[in-house]
Amino acid sequence: SHVLRSAAYSTATEVKKITVIGSGLMGAGVVQVAAQSGFEVNMVDLKQDFLAKGEKIITSSLKRVAKKKHADDAAAQQRFIDDVMSRVHLSTDSARAASESQLVIEAIVENLKTKQSLFKALDGAAPQETIFVSNTSSLPIGDIASATARKDRFAGLHFFNPVPQMKLVEIIRTAETSDQVFDTLFAVTKKMGKVPVACKDTPGFIVNRLLVPYMMESLRLVERGDASMQDVDTAMKLGAGYPMGPFELMDYVGLDTIKFITDGWYTAGKGLVGDKLIAPSSLLEKHVKAGEFGRKSGKGFYSYEGVGADKGK
Ligand code: NAI
Image 1 (tube, rainbow, N blue to C red):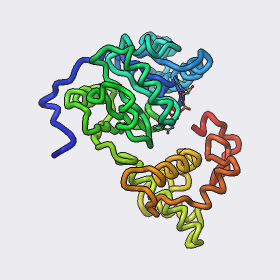
Image 2 (tube, rainbow, N blue to C red):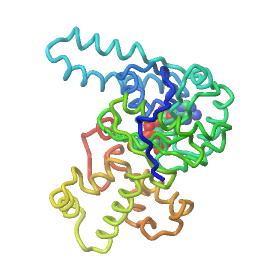
Image 3 (tube, helix red, strand yellow):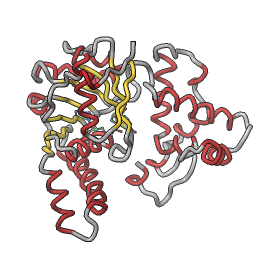
């Protein structure tokens, strides 16, 4: 059967208020696009400091949008920013925030136990009909959902970095996710101006399932001495039309993140355990051990001195 149902039969429920938990790189981006699209949004994190950081990510991004929208009209730019921010509500109380939302989007640390305990607590606090989704890149949605009693109202909603720019959202349905929930998520992401695609709960979903083995193959090509990393990047940009070469892309994503994902799949990924496509790479390990995580740490395969941690992300 086709995983993607026709929107013509939509039974979507109306979402007015969204709670986003985690105001880091991804959470702040999701809050921004949701508020820009007219949703009321609760932005939740553990501490006020973290919320302030998230708020700063949003306002500096909105400033760029405002400048494009209203060039040479500073007052209109400020009105635009104020209007969007009037729909963003900061909170450190995830249970309370979830209790007044129709949709809860989780974007906290990539750790199964932490995500499970968060959702377990929220399950008791949120209304019956509230939909829970995780933005996880590498953990099985079904495993996170198992901590709740709302498996039919649980799905994956996988955004891409940077969220305001990247059009794609992968909607992940487990065997238990209901059609109504899928239709609601489809409608919400469309309203956000995104392009949703549907995928079953399988490691890497669509994009990372294809991208991660490609990254690992490029590491092995260089490890064998078949080509230099600079030539691999040039080749894929000019020969395959990719905007970044694989080594530039890995530096952008974060080498620690790639190691975390491949290690997880290699030891526990459904259908991927022991798969040589994602086996550990000595070149990747060497950089991660040295604390060279890519753009965010100023050095990875390439050096980003002067780029700064913010720009690196
Ligand atoms: P991040 O580290 O920038 O932000 C995580 C935020 O969650 C932090 O502000 C932290 O204080 C907060 N947090 C942690 N535990 C919390 C809790 N129990 N309650 C409330 N807040 C909590 O992480 P990032 O990069 O935004 O990633 C978040 C999620 O998004 C992860 O699951 C990751 O796999 C996924 N993701 C990341 C992408 C990326 O390119 N960084 C892309 C797509 C998905």
